[in-house]
Image (tube, rainbow, N blue to C red; front, side, top):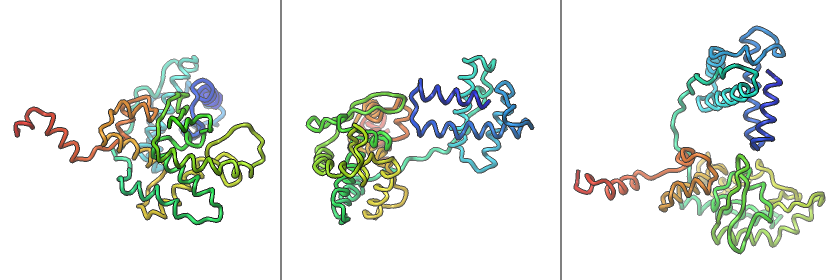
Length: 311
């Protein structure tokens, strides 16, 4: 079982080009399955084989996750990882059939993702201007981070992977390679352009603080001149959420949700938003978007024949 899991994770990394974050999540779920199977079957983990796993074992694994307080969404993610693992195992000939294929996915409660209203966004984007830290370059960097996140809807991992060669500041467009190795072009507005140019003006000064050990030119740097990490971006957002006195629960991904929601509310086509976000499925895009009840009612009244007649 251990060898199968490692081969599968290598397949995801090398052939499917999954992100490090996704690979860590899959590894965690599959290693948890492996430990569970050892207890469930009453044998050492090293002796558990893929052919020992049947639908009852998979259902029991989900039941154990429930008993351990794992939420339904995380249960569903774990089941998806198990299904994918055994689909791979069946192709490899390690099992005759996928034991997880017929196991139903736990139904997760449907919740709307958090997004910011226009006034809240403005307060957040203006917060770096009042930052009086000793290092004057960092507020300029932070302004560019916030403006870029809101202007493009990038994932945090995509943001920190940007190099200057990926940006055309004059044309206001950037190139990004997202999940699954999918490349897309994303436009951005004049305010993000201005923030990026202001940061670029001091970028070289910050870059010189590093050791210069590579030829890459990451757009966003830490205070030591190296590439900024996704964890650091989260700290940047937390800092200005506090300064803007926004409610708790605002994270970098909130700006991605907000980007999609504001485009939709402005009349953008859902499939265009799907392309900008880099989603492979339109259903995923729909989960990222909000439509105000008043807008839904307005569309209904204008479009439905019976509504037009007062029906």
